[in-house]
Length: 591
Image (cartoon, rainbow, N blue to C red; front, side):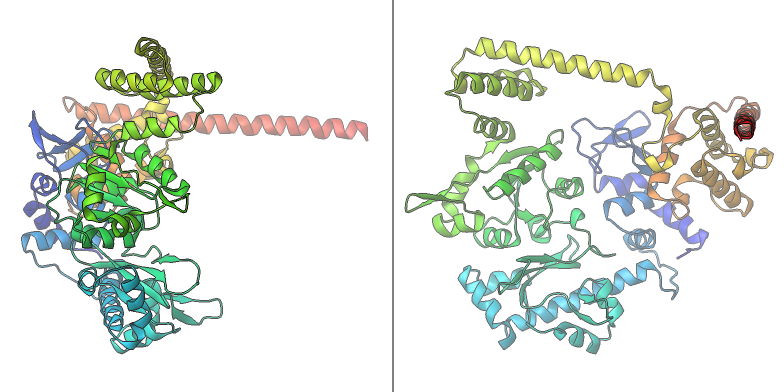
């Protein structure tokens, strides 16, 4: 919806960006700006900047940027209207609402529907319809108290039980389908998505029911079923159990593979357990975890799929601020045969105390990687031993700490039965090769200034870098000195970049209509990637000493490049005509 400008101006005035961001990120002052670790990507050195003067943020690492509304949209996964409402609620400001059916209203309606559905499923767990689900919980030794704490429920083995119940509460089939609670088939029939399943509501840190997970109570496939992506639910942005784990007194989070693992661990006293929703760990999920802890213990299943998921998680976390450990679950030996077990199995077999000891003895991620690498080679074979040492050398050479390189180099040497000195030489060679390669890549990048001038987002890439550089300068000047806007004779269609032309239109139109052209006020008019690039443009140095003359210079470059491109196109067309004429002439001769 379009909020009144006066309301947005008051909203921005009351929500100082420094105050809002500091509730998510620890900031420290450096000069006129505030810096901290970026909440949008993993980093160890602060590259996230907040400008109290300009009321914008910008990350020099990942490139994200914008005003306070954009920040809330990104970090809370909200639409523009919902981010505005979020900030309004923060400062007790009444929101001028309208009754139009936009995305924000649908999202609120779906969240309300999800809450009602969770109550419905939970109530059935205690009734005859939930008998199979209760039997399954008893089999898994999950107590009624734990089931209540997680809001577990039962979906009956019926085609439309939920649909009927929700219709009585005032919801329609369209809303049920949009919420991912019902499915519409090719013939137009609508039926419940979750049937004959144990239900796990997925609850946000603020207590909203975002979606659901369902475990089959029969032989139906798939065994586990999650809500689809909806306007309220994104699997990559949330974690199962985060609503409870956020309150843990423990210093870390245990990252599990499944919902049952989380429930069992919480019941056993490990209230710091969370799980991803049927996907590998994502960067968005690590940002969510970083609000509460900087230490992660990965506890995925010890089968090929779990090992692969662990490796992917370690790749995402390798350059992050997190301290990472890997808990390797032991195999269970039954009748001389090794069987894989998960966290739920381990707790039931050996108890919470044994799991606590396992956590305390868990390997850090470097140890885990080295042991995992070692398991791939037969070290009794001279050829495979050499291959192992080369691979280990490559891996250890990437470690930034000389102490870590020495320690883990020594362990690799011990495993292979060679001297630490020989291993150190192998690591030094690998590190030298890696450094040389990085230097060459940097030199190649430096010799391609056109690439350096391009936006990060591929959809915003410039066709004519020289013209776009001047167009960026125009945008920057107009933002810094709005009095130049009436003096600028450019038209949006003269811009070589469609994106920069759009920015120019937004800024000039807002100015003509007496509306704010502060960057933080433009969030309603441009997308998130566009806003990040705008902030990047605004951060570049620009002198206002002779701003009108500079504007004229930029305009001249834009016109020159446009004429040059037109001339090139005309020349190309003429060459085509000449070639075509020659071909027709030759063809006539042959005839």
